[in-house]
Image (cartoon, rainbow, N blue to C red; front, side):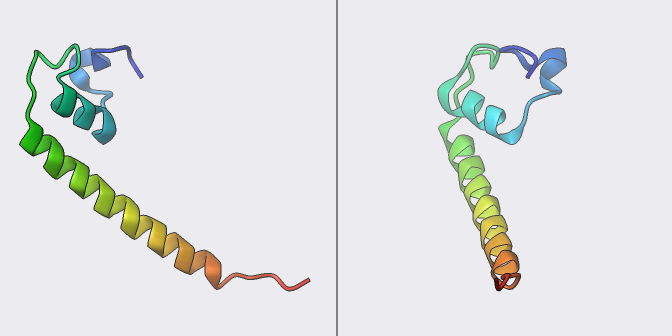
Length: 67
């Protein structure tokens, strides 16, 4: 969003870009690669997205329109 380094001081980073920096040691991550933390973050993101998706499917399933 604000270039490769997430200026100012990574304030505009999202969880996904933070995950990418941890997993792959992208530029601006000061060469830090923490696979364990990236795996934990990726798992949490997966769970959050899965729960959100299931809730949305359940919500929209009840709102069917008959023509």
